[in-house]
Image (cartoon, rainbow, N blue to C red; front, side):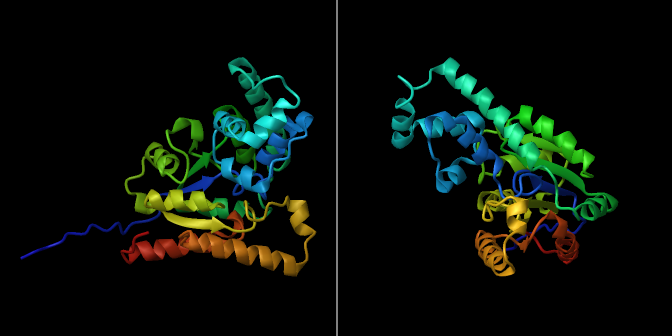
Length: 276
């Protein structure tokens, strides 16, 4: 006789783990690209949206290393400089980059205006809150207290520099879950705006909720978004929603302010013995 034994977690959600950029801060994911453009403005180097998207999840040093390995970028740089930056010059560029990142991220820090009720619901349910970010610890340490002031009480956060692999590897989400003392990854919900972030949550064995209009597919600030017609908004929303579902997201909403119904449905599915 051949038998299979399947364990099922049937309890409550234990933690909600948020991505930072495009989910909690930086509506439209503009800050990192703006910081890079500002950093290299003296060279008149234009970085395409595809390049900015490709490197957005990488730590600061990895982003600059990626750019300086591109032939087109190197040739533009060398039109203004006699050689590529040495180790000391690269460190100076990183510090300038971080200064610009803080500047632009702080300008776009505000959470969606109706997010506080969702955060109050999360606390009332007893869920722990984690945050994952590609920002270095210095930048994240500056932004986290500002999020707390807006009503989001964060139990633990993890920077990309704390793990060996970037998204879509599950390292960030799993590191956060371990620090939150979570007993089952099936009891975790990963909320993210990007395809890599959704894949990260799935690879970690978690439920996933995509945020369609606050993230990289919109690529517009809040003010720019509000100036669009309803037809333009619907087109962006539809394309982003479809892409996130195709990446495997269990749910897709507009912004973090809309996730309460998702959390309630996940709780019901867990009680029925369903798994992510």
